[in-house]
Image (cartoon, one colour):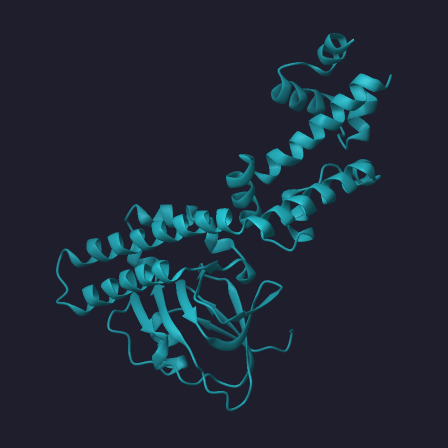
Length: 305
C-alpha cells in the first residue's frame, strides 16, 4: 500500500485529462457517461480528488477499495466521495472496462456563496465506506440517471444568469433523492441490518462484561463501528432509523442499564460504581445518570429500595 502511486487532482480538467475523457464543458461541473470509458491505466493506484464525486455505476469490472474495504460493482450502485478522500483501484493489464452509469463531479468553488456549500457537508453518506454503497432499484436508477442528465443538459445550454441556480437545484435534488434511497435501504435490508444489531449488542455486552471499561472507559462510537466493520456515520444512521437512537445513545442506554443493576443489587458506593463503569470522576457519571433517568444515582437507589 505504501508503494501505491497516489494521483491527486486539484481541478476537474486534470482528472478528465488523466482518465482520457474529452475536455470538460464546464470548468467546475462535469457529468461523465461511464459507457464512454473503455480502459484505465493498469496496476494499483490511488485517486484523490479536490472536488465532490457522485457515481452511479453498473457492471464495473474493476476492484475498488475505499478505507479498508474491497468492493466489486456488479449491480447498479451509487457511492459518494468528498474532497480529499482516497479511492484505490486495482486494474489488471489489458482489462477492457465494461460498465454503464454516470459520474457527477462538482468542485467546491461552484458551490461558493450558496446555501449548498454548507448543507452538502450534512449529508453523512459522503463519509460512508464503499461497502456501504447505495444499492438502487431499477426505478431509482432511472430517477438518478435523469437528474444527472438534466445537470449535463443545463451546462451544455447557453450559460446565463440562471444556469448556476438551476444546476445547484438539480444537485440538491440528487442529494435529497440519495438520502431518501438510503433510508429505504436501511428498511429493506432488514435481515442484514438486524444481524448488525445482534452483533452490536454482543460487542457492547462483551465490553461491559470485561475489564475494558476500567482500563479504557466507555467504548467510543468509532471503536464499535470499526469492530462491526462499518463507518461510524453509516452505523448511527441505520440505528437511528431502526431504533430511534444513535450509536452514542445506544452505548449510553446500555451503560445506564448496567448502572441501575449495580445500584439495585450491590452495596457498592456511587464512586465505586462510577469507577467500574469507566468514569474517572464520579461527578461525570452522576451527571450522565441524572440526564438519562431524571434521578441521581442515590435517588434511584433509594426509590428502588
